[in-house]
Image (cartoon, rainbow, N blue to C red; front, side):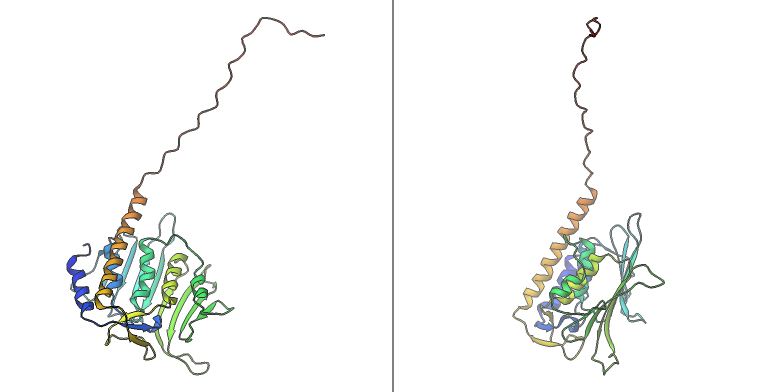
Length: 283
């Protein structure tokens, strides 16, 4: 079922009555509203494949290749799981995300599933540009040292590295603190999807949360936002319309017939000389 006006109205009703607070850093902002993710995919034509009376949500892409599962009753630390089936030209892949991953950061990943960014830089590029601390061993961490990004090297089980992101409470000495949320991208996950997630993660702009919304950690900073509640709703609506347009454009590109190449016309040959009947003259 496509995203309905009733569903959009339910989102607007909640957020129009909620005073927004700028919450930063992003990795500690808390989960926010999962509809940032589900509304975006539904607007792009993803359909529900789960029991509507269940707490679990399963969405499938129009080509049935991608499957996103949200399970708030999961007995593991992963509440979000994305699986992509292999095709003749692309391998399958898997990614998962923990309970407290901010929905707006996760949409960096899911929006790139709908329409890949025009440029696909090295996933480390946004991290370096945001002045996160990059280490020589293939890791980086946020200025508060609570969020860590790691590109784990090749192993005997895989010929490619995999990406791991963890936000943790401060540890003591060599002991790491408890995990707040994690993200994992297996070795087959396309680089542009990882890069889009990291771009949203390291963005310095705050996320909007309500006064009583759950944050990822008590050290998250919350200040009254200059945005009015209706502006938060309008931003969501504008993003949904943008995703609808991008999805339509992507579908047109896939269904557009390939231009036929005309076979080149062979160059014309000069007419053959008519025989004169004369023998060649030799001296």
